[in-house]
Length: 209
Image (tube, rainbow, N blue to C red; front, side, top):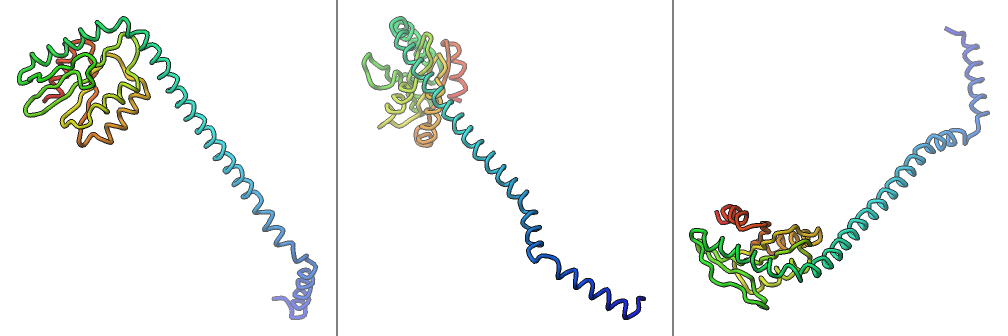
């Protein structure tokens, strides 16, 4: 153990050293240690903001792409209507025959030219069903066709089928899903894609079971 006098001397020297240290040195060290943390937070915030902006541009790009697809499809559909009218009548007749040949189905009403109702109305096991037939030679089912399909349902009770031979555009597909979710509990709707009476008959077994 150090002698008492030696210990007193060491204590005095340590106190003298403490007095020579600037009072703001410790604070400066604390501030210096916080700089890297602030730098990382700044980098993270910048990356997050940039990522959000890029994602927003991507969503806008997808929306514009769907809109352009819808416009191009409408042009194609107008051009195809001149040649597809007879094919549409034949396709609808095949659907009617498939229904009439299905056990238990009673076709109650067929749409007339320029009629704003559904193309076909039939009953099965005390169920009333309405069919809208859409036949296209080359274009896809557009947004307006889906809008009209749901508009025709007003004032009617039953199930509603949209039978089509070609695919839907992305906008019309999204619109169908939105409206079906909105009205589906009271007015069940189905999309049925079939290119022939045989294909429709196979799906008929599934949907009527």
